[in-house]
Length: 166
Image (cartoon, rainbow, N blue to C red; front, side, top):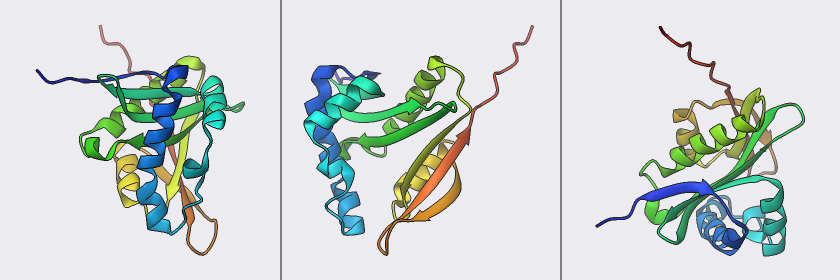
């Protein structure tokens, strides 16, 4: 009998697995940009634990293994900021990234009024850009960080509540 992937809130004891997954998941990004000092690869366990206490983290579990994660928070202007969506390489291209993103959007909307969702990715991260476009995100601006990297900023409006039909 196969196991299902379950998405739930991350627990403090998930920190090590999240960090390991983040490190594994960002290796291709580091290679793509020729930069092995990107923040996801240099984040310490202590820093991740502190962030885990302050932000919303979701994990996707296959049994006891964390195979996906995403984090976010709602800022003082009501904008939901989403970051570090990571899916284990063997679990990619099965819709798990979209499921995690949807789940986090719902979770953040429960926190209070959300005026929109924002995230960013590197300009060469074509798989990420395709995923975000499928999820309803649209490019708002491009920020050149250096000669190797430009960040593509994307935003998704809040979906209007569906009118109830009688």
